[in-house]
Length: 336
Image (cartoon, rainbow, N blue to C red; front, side):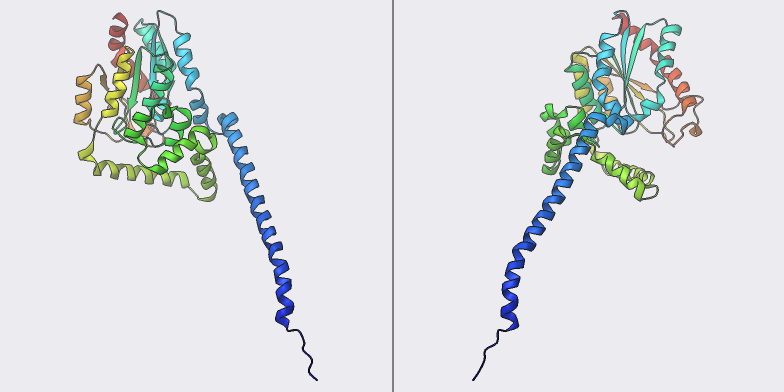
């Protein structure tokens, strides 16, 4: 007489079949929990950047003030005052002593003037073009004089370093023709740009990344600045035959339509730079004026506190020299 005993395999298989759906449900719930946490964190970041971004960054506060800057320059200037806009980047922020410039022009040269400064960090003509177009031309508040501070290759044709901010803060998406021509080269860039148009968190994700990496990697930001500088130099060297100023021509043309006098100011930096021949050709073929401030008496390299930006003493020296150099241009423009 034989007795058949159940094998271990037959006992285990039903149990495994029962446990598999349970494990899948647990994994699904865990995945949903992770996605929910990520969504909550993203919405929190979105709210912070959208409504309280100025508390996280001075540059965000400045970007958010663009409309107010253009409005105050247009509405608060007395009819007898010349409305002048300083447009540039952090070189202009540190280099121009706005109060001193106004004082010199008014008291020493007897020319009533109201000034404003728009100087988002780490920008060039690619960003300034949309800033003027959005907040002055389209808003119907053009200044009478626009003083554009630059150095090196700031005025050359090149994509913006901050397409994300162009999308959110500059309303550049309203100008698809120039975006496609100069800035958005790949499908990835185009998709990212559209996301940044509606999301403050996406538009500022690089700031968050830098904050985190600053805490994790010693001297991360200094190292990245040096690396980016070297890459920019290498890129410029490899593109010597491709230098163009098509966007600068468009920029000046926009200003000319509004009877705005453009003054391009070559600013002083520790490392001397030459003017491109195509840049000089643009100046000679348009109404723009080129003011050479590359070498200012009294400025020394030790007055650039980080190797690029002017300290307070240098700012006063440069601002005084600039006022002297463009005083006649301002008077001539006001007399027209």
